[in-house]
Every structure is written in structure tokens, then in C-alpha cells.
Length: 276
Image 1: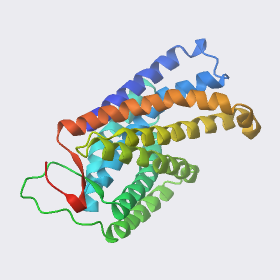
Image 2 (image 1 turned 120 degrees about the horizontal axis):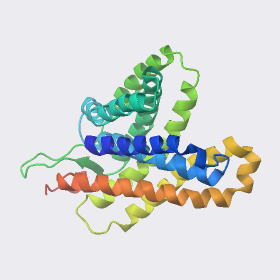
Image 3 (image 1 turned 60 degrees about the vertical axis):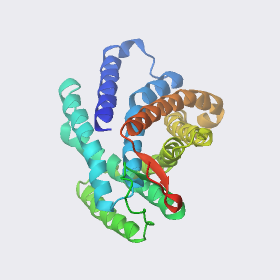
């Protein structure tokens, strides 16, 4: 998963570099071009981060191990994005690090809340390959939510100390992204890794949530370019452009699922758990 994230980041940096080189050929005032370009650059890494954080928080382990696993997958990709971007695109590393911290913390928090809620209120959970004599998986306790609250409080205090003016807006935007993308990821995990061929509904649910994610982003772009009235007049265009972003996200989800299947990860019913 870490290597998949790094690969997604490198593709994104390549697209950004090409955009900078041929920017004089593009009319940036056109909404369709802007929306497709933004989705091409951003949606791959964003859904990859969503998958990494969601699968880590849906894993049936202690919260500390879940956080460590998410950091192990995501941090190298952030480092590559910052270092390579700083060299190739002349970015300011410290500013990018602050932005990445905002993105990770806000999306991680809301993804974690959604994943823990599914574990708490449903019978499903994600687990790595287990031996035939492994003990049954227990329920998720309220202590995980309390631990998550402490983690978020510390992280939010650290971000506020960075004195970034847009930290609240970053938390709001990527928090909403986490809330929308995590159900899509978990739906695909449950549908594809539970040892059953009846996975159609999970992918349909993933399509719906991915479409909502893409529509949210494109709607935000439309508001920035045309104001609220412009968004209302171009709803049809926003929805059509969002199909492209949805297809991109579903492709990344499919690749991620193939990785987990290769290493024998599985979603199990805790009430009827039988090791594979």
C-alpha cells in the first residue's frame, strides 16, 4: 500500500509538471478543463490516502497500531511529494508540510470516526491472515473512541500552533472528504474481502459515495469560479464532469483491493468468524 501511494504521488507530480509546461495551451477560465485537470491531479492521491486511513482504522487491532500503520503507509508518500515537488516545482517545503499535516489529521480523524462506528455498530471488521487456531475476534469498545479523541486534541493543538490562517477551512474540507470517502472504502472492503461472490451492492455503494466526493469537489470549484448562482446554472455540467473523477477513484480502489487480496487480508463477520 505504501508503494502504491508513492506511485500515485509520482504520477500526480508528473501531471503537474506537464500542466506547468503546457499551461499556455489551456484556457483556465473554462470550468470543464479546470475540473478535469484538478481531478486528474488530486483525486488519485486523495482516494489512496482515504483507502490507507480507512483500512488501517477498520483493522481489528489496538488504536495505537492502527495509527502507526496509517503513518507507515502515508508518511513516505508525503515525503516523496514534498521533496520531489520542492526540487522539480520549486515549492516551499515547510509550507507544504503544514498543508499535509492539516490534510492528514482532518481526513484521518473523520475517516477513523466513520470506520470505528462501522466496527462498533456492525458485525464486520478487517483483519490480516489468521491461523486456524486463532481466538475469535472481540467487539470494539468505547475506549477506542476516547483514545481517538486524545489523538485528535493533541494533533489539533499542534496545527493551531503552526499559526496557519486556513487551518479551519482545511479541516472542514478534508473532514467532509473523509466522511464521504470512508464509507465507499469500507463498502468495497466488506464486499470484496469477505470470501463471498455477492459483492455487487458494495461496489454500487462505493460508486455512489465516490460520485458524491467528486461532486463535492467540482461543486466547490464551480462556486469559486462562478459563485452560488453559477453553480445552480451549471449543475448538469458538474454532475457529468464528476463521472470522470468517480471512474478514477474506483480504479484506485480496485488496485488497492487487489493488493490486499494478494496478501490474504479479509473482512470477517465477528459473530460467525472462521479463519480462511
